Length: 295
Image (cartoon, rainbow, N blue to C red; front, side):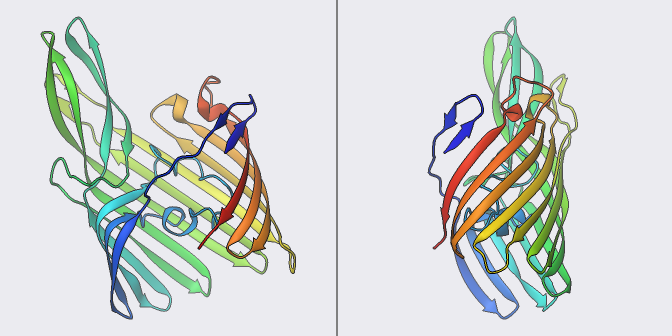
């Protein structure tokens, strides 16, 4: 449950985040097939479960409609080449575009890509697969630097008007995602950082043409666990830039966690969110209380 400064709240929802069949090939490789969390970056595949994430929310731009892919349906090969190098590479159905259509006088006047839905889809509209992956390097034990990429096509189905009649359209556009991430632990302190950029090329439908668009996000996070105590402090700064001003978000988040045990904790966090459009939901500050349990 999320409670905002204006007294409004948001309820819970139930979704199937992933469902896979995993086959261990050898000590260096495992095949993962089905609906899996995106291996792009560190947050989504390693940190987002509530009992692992140090804060009750995802960083700006790492949720639905953000810059960072959420999940994929396909086949993935992952493992470790050496004790200091790990990898993940996949082929999947790819994302879909959310197209906004503006009509006037029985004609479509404008097309705009509102966002890219980088979530697992069971069907592929254009039958063009997406290729992505990540490679991680541990120069020292527990210190990891990662680089990620994704290339392919995003597709969309939408309706246009011509002469007062509705016409079904299916279009595709080239998409590229790349990012870097780092984690550096030092005694009871852990520093994390991640940057992801998503670029979508323009496409034409008749005389109409969309613009090249991009989404960009990063966060820096530090957490400190008091030695021998169940208390933990967390501070995170994140910034998300979108083609649409009302989706942009700059955020400071501060949290205090009480660890009942390693896989169960109570989290209290306060988020200070900023957006130039003061009526946007991305401008609302909020306090979040969460009980997280992993099993």
